[in-house]
Length: 294
Image (tube, rainbow, N blue to C red; front, top):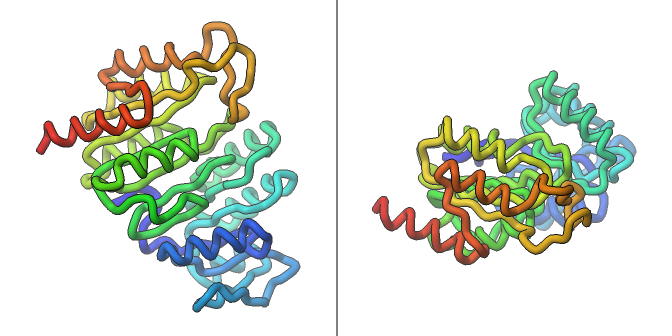
């Protein structure tokens, strides 16, 4: 099985006719994703040719849903317009909005994630690589040829570390890989994904990738202790990060004793999570768990 995204998912791309939208729509289609349309009010009624498939452009998300039955949208819209794009998608009744855009003002992210919740729309991101269910569907920018379908669930703040763990464990494969994004405010959390993987009968072990800043990993540790029965292996990026300096992601900043990698590691380990010192060591821990269960 999978979480959030399957081969039945019908995907719209907001911003499909822009440079990034075009590039990644082509890649999503090549991965088998059922991209049913793009959204651009200025180009409504046109079609865009992607190799052997012509994809229609709709004037609004609502129009795209009515014409195609789409239930997922991937947002490739500049930061200044992302809030309006997500609100439009939520108002149209989309079930899942994958917000790739980075550099969105935090107050906009707070506003559209809260609004989407009231409309029943799940947000992945912002500032994320999206999610992939290997062999079924790919919504975002994750390379589809790194790994195969398998037994591991992956939830990560970091796009690059998502790709690395997918590669390290490519021979085992993944049920679904979710890049939740590294901004201070995200729509889907580690906890959301942990709950979904716990309920997925084909996910046997979960990899959780965190990083410095905030308390998301500590909250995930508390949730794991009380609610997760499957083995969880963790990795935290940023042990050598200097205090007070943002490292890569807008949310990756240590302030005093808050948000340090060591504190997150200790919280996870106290909940029974084994935490790798490097991505490769993390992958080896996963392999050890699977071998012990075989």
